[in-house]
Image 1 (tube, rainbow, N blue to C red):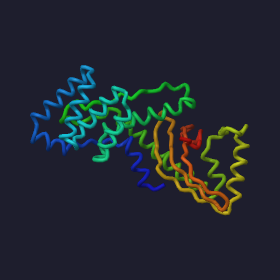
Image 2 (tube, rainbow, N blue to C red; image 1 turned 30 degrees about the vertical axis):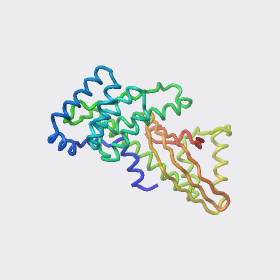
Image 3 (cartoon, one colour; image 1 turned 120 degrees about the horizontal axis):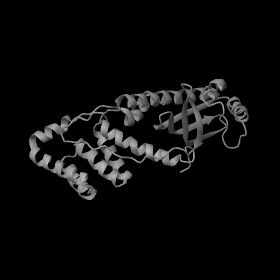
Image 4 (spheres, rainbow, N blue to C red; image 1 turned 180 degrees about the vertical axis):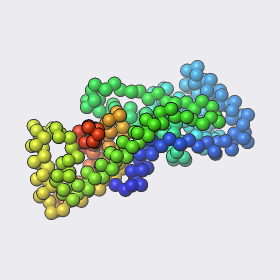
Length: 271
């Protein structure tokens, strides 16, 4: 897993910069019409008329396809209607044009976190599901201020830490370093089919010792925070040894315990 891939994935949920330079140039040239439409959409949203809001903003986006505020607010309108897939598509399209937009990224991350929480209700059955709320950009020319900047920075650091640990976990497995590999798991880890952690550890020791070589590649790695101290990582895993070869989609759930991140869940994803 390359540093570039890890950076590209983490930046979706955590970067805190906002740039409206391109939009400002448009406003200067067509300010009156643009501002009037923008305000109409804002009023419709405040009145709870999401259909009208979506209609106005969709029309605006055709005229101003690079406008970040319009894209963000259209996505928020879809979020209010619980049409999360459409909101995600709008946000991802806007992010393709400028991956630095904090508000767009924050709203998109709410959707990702919501989807992840739904998927893991059986694991985190005591955690209340948080519905995406969406953040509206208050005016066409305003700079978005993020009051939770320090908290999001901490989440960013945690995500980077876990992403680095995933690479070290992969490397330990591929190099058949048994003690290092087992050290990434919580001491009570015992997946289905094993009564104790030691029984699982003994099985894994045999799996790492037997092959004459092991090669592992990870692709399409996604890092998503579920709670302040729980992070989910999903990826495609290509495994090859002198006796076996396969490719599966996998999830690892990491938890922070005593200032150390450990794997508490590992599963193959069957979709």
